[in-house]
Image (cartoon, rainbow, N blue to C red; front, side):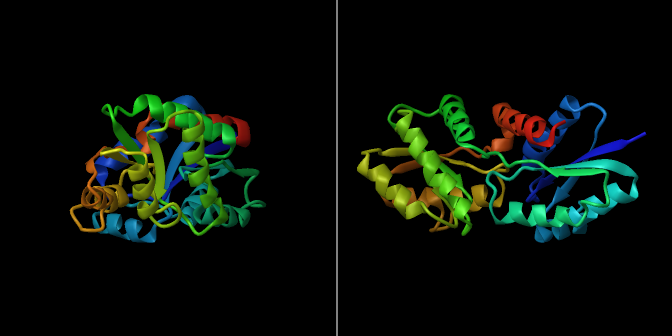
Length: 258
């Protein structure tokens, strides 16, 4: 009998509530949609893994999960990341899996959330209808951002929102372009006096709670307030939207062939 396993790889979070709403929600969906497959969890953040282990919660890193699958007799191993784009972390994941090509009968790595222009269009349509904003309120999506060339996805998504006439939706990143200063500038130019901030990340973890909604002077909320724009927050990760997890599942069926 050929045993098959799907390893769901996330950056990880130490917040148990958002872990259940996003990561566990997605894993449960995979178990329902892919009968005959076992599901295993792995995180890429060593800091989060160590923190959880100190709380007696054991989470595999990627290599540990792959070795577990190999040593447990799985012939087919499918690795599905919850990454939003195919940046540095995604490339590291692919590199890790290359060492196991000859060890499994079959091993494949799935695509991130945004793997095509079509994905961007779907996401723009979905979020514009699902996020409940008030009249005259801008919606700012806070992405992570990366030095990788695939950071271009974020300004591309912002352009798609504009082209689709969702002109109150804006996209920024914590660690790359466009940053918070660029977003504030364009929101002000468009004449908005109110803004709703929400994460454009699979999990509403540390970045969402501190960098976006925190009380510190550099939080996005306070930066908007200091710029004269009233700000409120929606702490909800992309993994909490059924329509978003549907896109990942579509990718799994298309790119993994399962």
